Length: 200
Image (tube, rainbow, N blue to C red; front, top):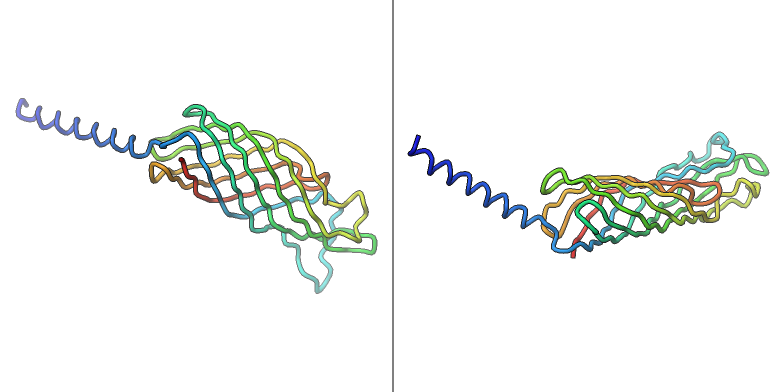
């Protein structure tokens, strides 16, 4: 038993040293971070829908999207973040002035949010955002009644959540879902993305 004690102590010390080294390696070098992500977005156009006319293109409800953002960690669990999101272009058949017509809309949003973070271990963490977004939609809808048009802008609440995997002291991979609420009077939108975050 006494012969095993030094070996046991050595193993414990080695394990502690390796754990400390990993914690030091993966701890961010700064509380400031920048990030970017790519993925898909969807918008809901609150206007009178119409069936796709025979022989015409179907609706395109999902578009390519990207997000750029920066933030600051006030503590290990809380911080602030601001960013810009481009939601891409979608198409929807709508009941227009002369029958079914296809609305085309492109959305974007600027946002500012408070953030919360829940570390699961040295590498993995869950995070969430709650804040305000200023959205804007540009649309092509000449034959749509004025009250159904989706172009315009709006301010509303935004919410987001996701996960982070830190593979280096200064870099981590992220997966996020963000919902920006009202982008204009008749449009809402959100996006699902994966990306890279850098601490500096």
